[in-house]
Image 1: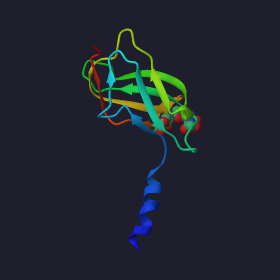
Image 2: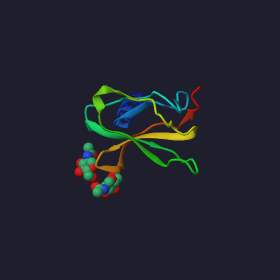
Image 3: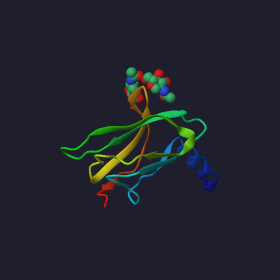
Length: 117
Ligand SMILES: *[C@@H]1O[C@H](CO)[C@@H](O)[C@H](O)[C@H]1NC(C)=O
Ligand SMILES: *[C@@H]1O[C@H](CO)[C@@H](O)[C@H](O)[C@H]1NC(C)=O
């Protein structure tokens, strides 16, 4: 009987945007281009802003990547950066409410940014 309840439990956990990449195995490079991919449910907000977060001491804490991103596209490519992103570990991508950055819709797994060649 117990198995009947397992799908219900899993369904209850599927509550919104899931950031697929970047992740711990597939990170970014300092120069890019760097892609962000995600999955969306019909009930998710249609748009969001993207923020890059890091806990590097002396580095960026939070960097706005894009706003007004259409959630239905499933991918956003950050164009190559002239100055580049800092290299390091422990970065996150957050999808946030455009009018309230504390209102987080989704957070990626931690990922690394490696120096471009
Ligand atoms: C975004 O934040 C504003 C202000 O807090 C709120 O009114 C609005 O409902 C939020 N939007 C979503 C999609 O959660
Ligand atoms: C922004 O979002 C946070 C987290 O959801 C919430 O606690 C706060 O009240 C919101 N601020 C406004 C101005 O809506």
